[in-house]
Image (cartoon, rainbow, N blue to C red):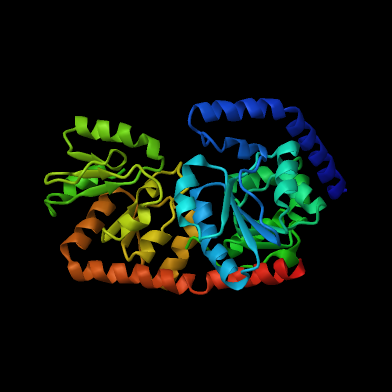
Length: 401
């Protein structure tokens, strides 16, 4: 009964996506005119390839944006090392991630934009690239893609799989659940981000035998700045906005308040007297973490954000401070704290944050203890995860091709 309802919901979705295709095309052109799609490569979103397909087996990795794409890269490297016969195709959706990921991908990886989920675009993309298997990162469940791939005999894997509480509640409704269950039944492998996520996917009726847990692959504080310069007079606060396009607006506001601000996107230099450095660019956080002893995860202080990834800060050996709202990364924070209680300092608000930062800045030994704790916890948790994901992908998907 559920399977029948799922197929019915898919037929409705497919008919709607077919009927709306002309509108989606116009929407893509509008986005391209506004700079939201790549100016030259936007036709790839319609399934029109811009690069030749090499002969031989092909494995397609798909990620929606920068964070998911960066998560896929270690697994791609493992694939290349263990299966040099495979051609790797990588796709993302967001134009903002394009240059960053392109420069990080190993040599030989083909990089394209992902097709929109219309019957024509998906059929054109799959017909041209003919992937033998598809590895989807996190939660990109698109009905036309998944059902067409399954119909063509293409193996499917969902890596670092997660579903937010909001999406879980929506997907669990009687109308949508049959379609979600139908899509999940087409996968050969689901590697959830955590044990709790594994339970979520089971509740969404994913077959239990395809779920294998390996570990997590991703393993505005201006008032505080005013307080801290009394302790550290030459302090520079680096701000990395969640949305880089807001950098100019933030800079203008701070300059009106009398701050000396440098903006990364316009190439401003850090000079004597600079208070704030706004890094409104993508893909540079890991380098910035290497320059600073302390990382404050700013989005964790507001309840309507979904948290920020602390893995790069921990890997760089920063002392990490977060607020109470860590969202999607609550499991990562908990596991690091369980590995070493000093690895992540979680504070309730501005006052506790000021006190914690004063303590770290005024005591070098305490600061070094927290930096080392974060780095050790990160490496203890991340050790072997990529190899585990590769082994699951190879055994459950690639060896069966």
